[in-house]
Length: 130
Image 1 (tube, rainbow, N blue to C red):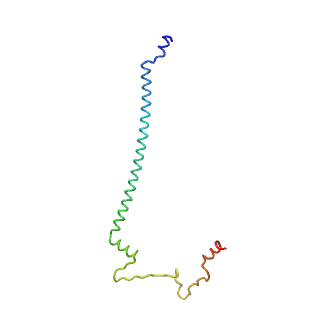
Image 2 (tube, helix red, strand yellow):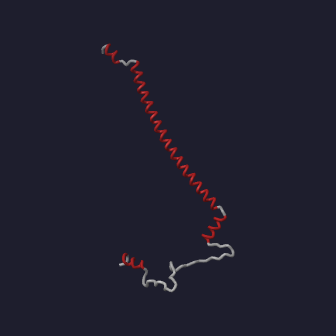
Image 3 (tube, rainbow, N blue to C red):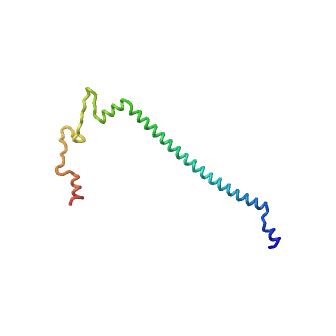
């Protein structure tokens, strides 16, 4: 090798510094980009969790109001009367049973019920029975 070619192939200090600066800038850009993406994902997750907390707090408030309403004596009495059929001393119970949805007007006989098997038996025999 020739001395002139050797001097031409050597890197100067300025070329090394420029190359190092480019590598450092690329590293910095990549690192900051990754940090920005990660921070954005954390922020979105935080907002999602805040919405979940808000929904849970709303549900808690609704359940608390329902529980407080269930603690009153009027609610307990209403539930006992409705579900268990209990009455206070001196009260009576009436059980109403209707055979027809609407009674026949006065002076007219009630419509006759069809004789024979019920209507659903006709459908059953049509589709399922041989």
